[in-house]
Length: 157
Length: 103
Image (cartoon, rainbow over all chains, first blue to last red):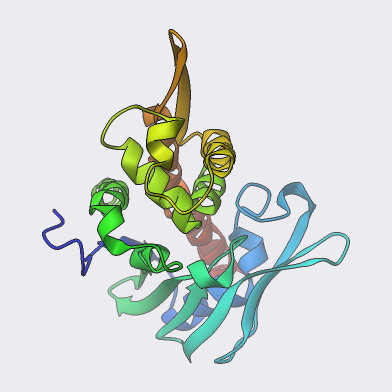
């Protein structure tokens, strides 16, 4: 799948789901009622101690979880904020910001509701760390990630 | 969480190089350290991190210890990524649609 390891084209993870609500409602629930649906107990930095998940609704705002003890764990930063159509953010929960990927979520009106289209991309960001020689990677690491991401994509095709 | 451990482990450029080399086949630590600017003990330390993240495994072959890619660990990572967004979106749908019916 990878033809040129120097300029990797790693397929984003793409998922979509149709919900029987308006784009306005979908956008609001997705971003402002996140702790009502996000499985914080399993998919969070603080696990069972995680209590809330907050999207600061503006460009530059942070997306963060808060623990029962008031600790804050940052997941990313809002890059674009266009309710009810879409938003875009950096994505690095529990990781250094230098390894941030990008998440874009679009809310498209369709018959009977809204198609929520999610794209998790920027896997190649993980290749841009530090001064290590590109030649040393030999393209293999890229191929591994590509295989993983491609498997995800197939699962939702 | 296997996914986070793997990303943390591979965020380090030296560890990525070590991991890459092992993809060509099992190797002892001395061979892995060849041409790297870090010391052999440092390579051993990096290997410990990769093993903890289940990306690399260690085998004793006679008097030598060989390191290789842990295929089971990669399967963990793939499985995690595969369900990651699917689970979350399914829950989102349930909540969004139940909230729509609220008075």
